[in-house]
Image (cartoon, rainbow, N blue to C red):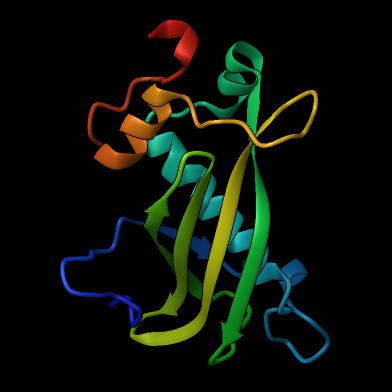
Length: 156
């Protein structure tokens, strides 16, 4: 498995396996196209968790949440019932209030889908853009598995 969109110096940031269940498939027995958005969301959530970012704590203590601002997906091959799909995720860009991810769904060495997802940080109450708290930015830049303690501004 490799990220087809990888550039010089870029690496897979995180992988997360997902099994295809009956509920994920359409009448033709293949994964319904919108479910890849769910798979990518789960992998980003696990990415944040592996970076030490607890999203509930971030919302409660810092008053900010992450929301999807935009997505672009391409489909390459179908996944079917009982397949194990590996979602590979990498941060492409971190801005003041947003993060751009490249994500790919793989079954063994077969690329199934690719996505570019922009996630924005917003004030939980006003739903207006908000700066990503500095400790969270640092955790995202360090990446998953490096000092994975729960991160929030309130605990910094």
